[in-house]
Image (tube, rainbow, N blue to C red):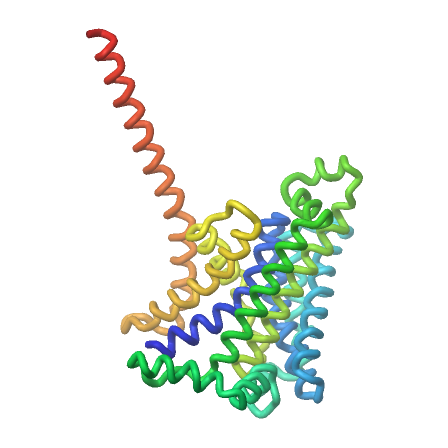
Length: 329
């Protein structure tokens, strides 16, 4: 169980980068972007083929982010310049990327088990420092045996994800970022201030898909393979992470919201992992579990607010009745 939870936390922190990308389009730009299902695989495909070709893993991962940025920009262009509905633009790009990803990979699946990935480099570096043994000895002294030997991946990914979160926070507080947020709230208003909303949407969707592709590249290296179907339904996972995070941790500020999205991605992976431990559930039920989690995250906060409002009204009515009785006496 400990190993499973550790793995869920580890993959959750990587998927959190993808969730941040979904947050930018879904919440900030109010743009239902289904390109995510394709750009995630694009990132995995570009990084995998680059690593197999002998390019250093770090550069390959950055190349994946650039490829995702261009894919997002095309979606933005279809919507702004082609005047195609935002939802349809994402669907068209997602379909086109399926064939493009196959062209990049040359085959449906690319194995990376015998290749030097960024995580294998981290493990070899940290193994020589003895940090993995240090953490495992601490947990071993607490009676936790069979502890994972991939502390380097977890610690480095936490640092990378937090760095991307801080970069996103800073970007959204700049002049361009504020204009981007205003575009999502009211395009007509921001146009009255001579802002080019088309450019803002294109750049915003591009930046979002760059994060998604970056996450896809890391997941491919973490799992040891890139598959053309690994992005199917990913937008639902991203939305689940955003919605769960907002419901659990709140959205008072940008910094708190982006942190909530990261927390939501981790909670989602942990809940799915725990749910799959049940004997009556199978691996194929993961989509059903995701749907139920999203439904719960959407319905529960509204139900709680409704209950609080009813309680507040009842209390106010009681106080008013008491006041009338005192006035009459």
